[in-house]
Image 1: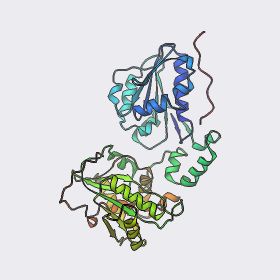
Image 2: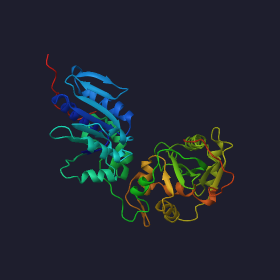
Image 3: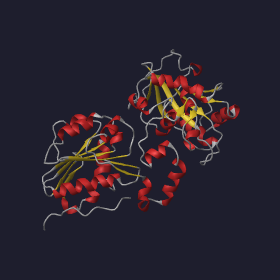
Image 4: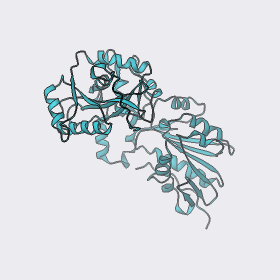
Length: 401
């Protein structure tokens, strides 16, 4: 398994491995599994570092993108699968498999079904490529007897990546938990005593937005003038479902000018057909309300200003309790937000860096608070919101002639 940062060359590594195996072993069957069928096709096969880019054209007999099946001149067949549909791996057998971005597989059962079918040939094996996340699946694979682990950071491949991109990534993410995971490929465990932990958040995560009876867009101003200076403006959409549970819908936080972030608030409000905007007025309250109301198209924006009368941690603890009671779900992944939550302890933040200066708990506190009206049941409003690469390996064998 290759646990490596973004841009390290994970896709190229996986493609080179299965390309070589398929060319060197005639009439073999190889599975390619990615988080979605689109990723398997567009990244693993057709991408700039995918299978078609590393295979000599003379080796490819046919590529049927609608079926996700690539056939070589020697009878080897590559078949793509989606990790969202583990049942599609029931029945097929394989000599080798490539699992890409395994930490992002939404169904851990996909790994089990893949292993059940990995039973052809004398030594069937799987190569896995992923940015690490401390999911139960990744932890389990790491503990597998005989597993070979390769680790690498984004900056190991600096010779093939734009210097400006690397500089921006360092500037924004150096020292943050998100940077340690996504760039340096550290498998980050939960901080002892943190009010939130990644496992709890992940267990309650959902992929589809349920029917909602109330939606609020919460704003935490920071005073930044934009352009990367100062703290980000926190903008989070959250709501209450018809089932009585809370749902975090979007993290639209940004580092823009006052007019820019006000427009972002309005866009988020419109996107989710929200009921109101809740903004903290501790930081320039009158200015914040004025900016929101004068933004283009936002004059009629229903804004409610609230005062934070307690410290950040004191306000965070009741919300963390809702997570612990399994009453809150994130609709999708919000990496920067979740990074902040998991770094917050009763004594303050653990760690350092730009991201840790954000006050995410305000954004979660306000939408879930009876103070902002989310606990009011009537009138129900049922919404319709369902809402480049490393050194190449030796060229694979070519067909004779």
